[in-house]
Amino acid sequence: MENNINWNFDNSYSRLSDAFKEHIKPVAVKYPELVIINESLAKELDLDLSKINKDKLSSLFTGNTLPEGSNTIAQAYAGHQFGHFTMLGDGRAILIGEHITNGNKRFDIQLKGSGKTSFSRNGDGRAALGPMLREYIISEAMHNLNIPSTRSLAVAKTGEKIMRDTLLEGAILTRVALSHIRVGTFQYIAARDKKDELEIIFKYVINRHYPKLANSKNKAIDLLHNVMSKQIDLVVNWMRVGFIHGVMNTDNMSISGETIDYGPCAFMDTYDPKTVFSSIDHMGRYAYCNQPIITKWNLSRFAECLIPMIDENQKKAIEIATEIINTFEKNYEEKWLEMMKKKLGLLGNHSTDKTLILDLLTWMHQKKVDYTNTFCHLMKFEVQEEDFQDRVFKDWKKRWNERLIINNSSNEKSAALMRTVNPLVIPRNDKVEETLDLANKNNFKMLFEFLEILKTPYIEKKNTYKYQIPNENNKEYKTFCGT
Ligand code: AMP
Ligand code: MG
Image 1 (cartoon, rainbow, N blue to C red):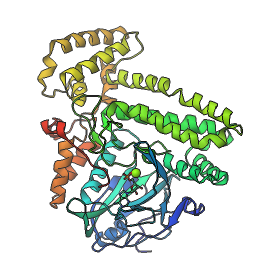
Image 2 (tube, protein in one colour):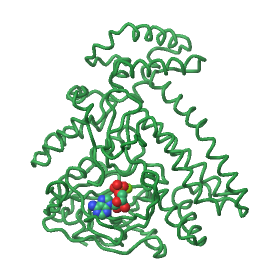
Image 3 (cartoon, protein in one colour):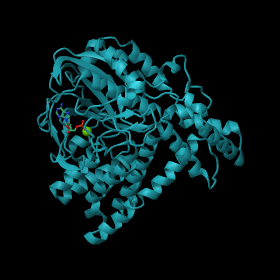
Image 4 (cartoon, rainbow, N blue to C red):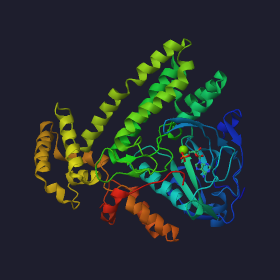
């Protein structure tokens, strides 16, 4: 087929019963126009973009043309949104298929902004160019920061305006994910109270994401352990780079352990554990420092769904699940400490390590210094910051240097370790906004330059410095949901 760019679909989720999804096609758009395509991701997926022209690519990445082998569905799910349980589902996204790479890896290919479905509630099923490019930039940045994330393959304009606060240009993002199965997917099925359906999604997830559990004695217990471990790794990574997801509802937590649903997320500049960017998060539920505890809360909701499969005796099952969930803090603490030690290049163990780390964080908080750039400074990447002349900080550095010597090792080893975990650049809020403003005016030069810098966040490039300095206005930065 001429539209084929080597899609190789095998749509296992669409073969599940109708309890799990709705069969529906994307709503055609007026004037499809490809804005950006991720060529390196296309290569990783073994796609061949050379065969077809831009018009046909535009048509393909807006869903106007459906590739051979696709079987389009909207997935059903529920979720606790800011603590309140709601029935949701893909209200503006359609899974076009599961692509299998030459190496036999399976990826969901989803069009986001593809029109109404039966889950759209009052929404228009559409998305705007700015937020779709924002997801592209940030998800790709996360991936390059070595943080599990859904990926962005393309953004195409629809040629249609959509109504938000003002009229905005419509666009569709092609999202690539290990899967779109969420904690909320389990919640949706559990709420229907049909054990056979729960068994289906449970077996499906083990088969697709945790095949090693196929022979485990109690698969539900082991699944809970595995998902918890992946989520702890994920949130530790977020804390490492100052990422604030912003809307950690259970429908936005992926069972595969990828960061998913880039809505009101943003990166913290000045270190303040209470940082919140989302305009609707009035109580700070999803503040930077609350992310671990919310991860635990969401995992508890996941555990509740697994109860019938943990043990026939409900009381016993709840006890087992509670015991597992209660190991969260200890596991998190350990992994967080290991991560922070890497950020400071600390090899081996010392009884004062945690105090040393906490003292630095306290100083950063009190002096309101930039989180990312403090670690750049410690790695001797000079970023202009008067605060680093502060006496308290200098005293702290003396202690740090003494500690570095204790387990030595060598300074080179410590420095090399730090270079693997402390990014030189993050997608700073003012730079993201500037990029999107220009893109909305049809100027994509900064988008391409920014993406190039974000491709190698641990390596200095010619233009890296332009993206390192935080803007004063970032302190007032606000982000929005449902855009
Ligand atoms: P999100 O905030 O992106 O995680 O979305 C939460 C829920 O709202 C999901 O069920 C989305 O499908 C739905 N949703 C968000 N925006 C729209 C829209 N413009 N039209 C229809 N549904 C939407
Ligand atoms: Mg969502």
